[in-house]
Image 1 (cartoon, rainbow, N blue to C red):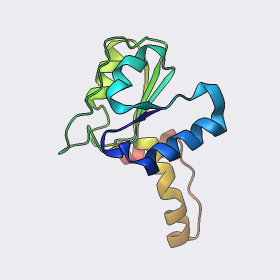
Image 2 (image 1 turned 90 degrees about the vertical axis):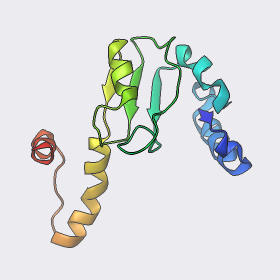
Image 3 (image 1 turned 180 degrees about the horizontal axis):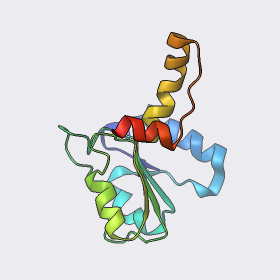
Length: 130
C-alpha cells in the first residue's frame, strides 16, 4: 500500500499502517516513490485518487513489471477506460472501472430521496452508459 509523497504525512501513513495491522502480511506499506518497484508482487492495484480523470493528470505509476494475473481497478469513472486501465489491459490484466463504485455510492441517496432502494445490476449500468 503506497503512501504518496503528499501523504508522507504521518496521519495517512498511520492509516495505511492500521490497515496493514488489520489485514496482516498481505498488506505492505511503502513510500510512493517505491510503488513502481512493488507492482511485480501485487495481486491487486487500486487507484482511489482522481488522477486519470478527465481534466486531471494521469496516474504516474510504472507498470513495466505488471503481471497478467494482477487485477487493476480505477475508481475514476470519467473516462471509464483510464490510461491506467488501458495499460493494464494491454498487459493482460483483469480491469475494473469506477462506474460500479459510483452506482453503489448513489444507492443510499436514491433511497432517501425516492423511498425505494434500487438494485445495481447490469441493467442499471447499461442505463447509465446509455
